[in-house]
Image 1 (spheres, rainbow, N blue to C red):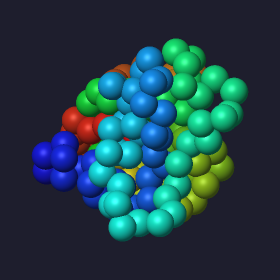
Image 2: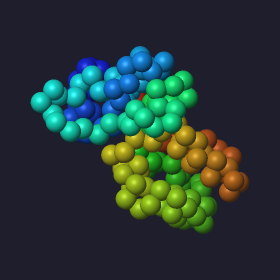
Image 3: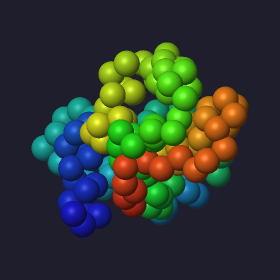
Image 4: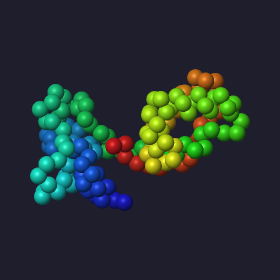
Length: 146
């Protein structure tokens, strides 16, 4: 899918967009780029409040960097045969508690991508429980962190 198709799709899905053209970050912001694809026949859309403090500045809290990152897709293989059963149960329960059940299973089955910070959270959780071996997600894809 090209960027144009992706931004157009996001705009049609009511992704929060931005129309602050004089923002110093707008050229690289996913919200601003997606805003270019909101249909002119659409009367209402979900957009950033341009009057909110720091919107349109170099510290905009709504800025989303328009750079591809490595996202993990699926967590069915993070638990290995040599892991203690108690560790597996603890990690699974902790992730479900932290992310909630639906979100956890969407990440597990690959229907929701796992951001770099979420991947690190999973790795830290294993490390805190004494597991030193590398954690491998099912696959990795390059995607925007919307």
